[in-house]
Image (cartoon, rainbow, N blue to C red; front, top):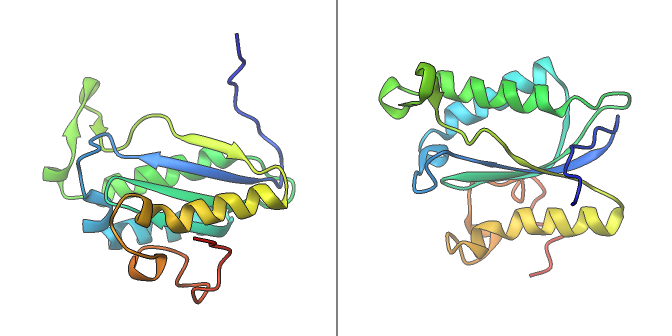
Length: 158
């Protein structure tokens, strides 16, 4: 049987996918201001370099480079997700067991970037995700992406 334990490597670069509990929701783009505020708060508390990011209605992808000597990506993601949830109007939060507010899926997908080719492939994936899901015809046409921060000169190939 395969071993699926998380890998914690100080200073590594990781790809993440974070999903909303309700995959039919558009909460992330509808409350993009709250999402951005939560991201800024997290980065002040736990610095990290955002190499690529895209926000879609129900999920988001990130490529993050951790600081040298630091492998604590769970604290960053927990602070970000909880900060976003706290900023939402009460009507947007469903109540789960024990009264907890269920906005995000409990788990997230993470992958440690292995080399330059892996980094390019994941940044490309992030920037093309709105096209893949039919939200835009090119990365230029999706407003919630680091593609624009890079002036449309990212590593996207298609």
